[in-house]
Image (cartoon, rainbow, N blue to C red; front, side, top):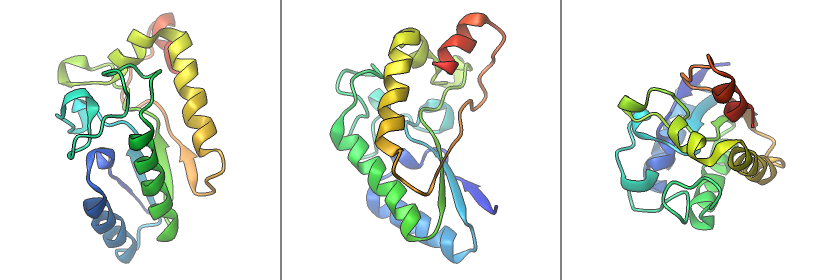
Length: 155
């Protein structure tokens, strides 16, 4: 595997992602890791976790149980673009660092609780189950030292 970490790729507009993916493919990469929802921890300073052109992943602020179809259709196109260029898409459903002072996304998972995290996980899993170029990755600097943290991440 020759991969690159485009952690915050989800916040980019399609033309920028096209350039990034095509460039990586020309450079010999065969995989790209990115967060389907990018937070401040990985460089997304946009309000409500939005893309650079203002599309939010959720219809209700940062409530992970309220997916915005427009946003997720865009993420679908990014995964498809990876496939078009022969790249494995290593997906993290949401950046989930517990380092909240640096913008870590665990706070959104914690706010949703285990039930909300299960709902979100099922939504994302069902959405991408038929993409043949997806490998899942989860964690991204979260600290699993409590039962609560473990249960939320597992959900």
